[in-house]
Image 1 (cartoon, rainbow, N blue to C red):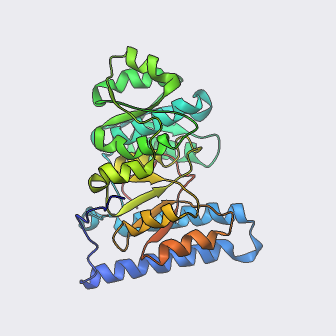
Image 2 (cartoon, one colour):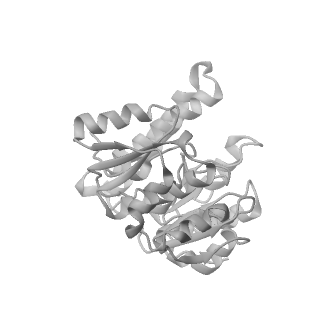
Image 3 (cartoon, one colour):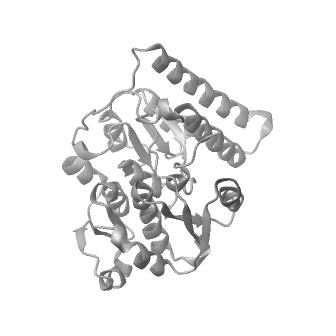
Length: 307
């Protein structure tokens, strides 16, 4: 198992660093308690907790003085967003476009916004148009988006549905400047002239840690089920972060132990034995958990200021 190198650490020695860390812990704890109170159904409190925790995290690290926070990757502020509905893409296309989102947020004012069927994302999109002057262009073809932005892509990483290779590919996409392509789409993508950077079929997150762990973000890790096609994947690419899922296993513990204390664990773990189980495992190693497995468009949204 590879060991991550801690290239940057949280500033605990200063009053500001201590206050920020304590404020976040209190905000997150309060958000979870508030969302769980009053007999609110579990699914609803999780969604509320996710929203409050993420908004609290972005607020704590927003502003020029905190722009270099090790926990929040910030993309380029978009001036034009090409939007596409989730329903207008196949599962593999959603994964492809989600990883393309993350790459574009690293470099470009023209970016992509995925429109889920629920969750208020159209309201936020309209707010970006009305308040920030973002130009909105609606498209219906994922292939057109890949063709339009192919000059910003170095190539593609190949994965296979049904094994762990989609998380392995997502973990390396930001480092390689590559989109993540399922085997069923390879011929179409290759026809555009994009080169294959690496075939990751049959490989998993353990292989990524052993071979590229030192290159990954040492302060952030994404815990996401392979079946989640695009949510959070854009932000993993922007963050150059490991994405993995292995239930409440010994491998999960080894992943958490490979990160320095105070790492942020975005996503959500295996709740089959209770949500406290995977949260406690992370907390025991000094990490904090941010519910974000259903988060969409974090890469393009990260470029806007918090008011």
